[in-house]
Length: 154
Image 1 (cartoon, rainbow, N blue to C red):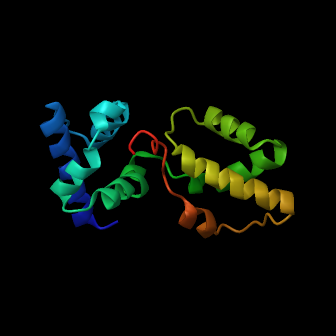
Image 2 (cartoon, rainbow, N blue to C red):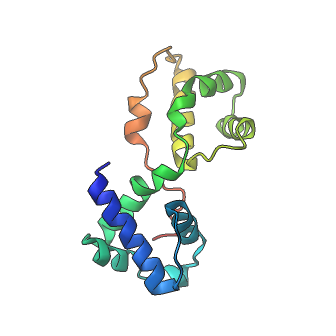
Image 3 (spheres, one colour):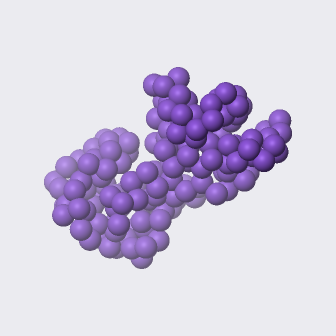
């Protein structure tokens, strides 16, 4: 992640929240969670405004938020691949794997989309008989797009 771009984007998010909602947060995770609570009327035009503050077009701004910036607020699922493999071998349904995994880690905050992608990939490999003991998670990692709130921010 480009630190300068991340700082510029973080400042743009904070400026947007102040200008539009007259609220300041000291921590970026509070900014993120605040944005997640806004309704569609409150979010209208948000990416255009944040984009203007960060010198990005609105589409790039929205994608950067979902794919890069917001990922820092989630625990990386890739660290738990082996545990997910074991769960997938015990449980047949992907949703059961996800539910059990989350139940085992109530103190962790996982990106739901990333978790679904990793579980789906592992379950597909298991059903094809191609699960290996590799620690190479590049297929899942490169395809993960964190869109937990995609409908909220469009």
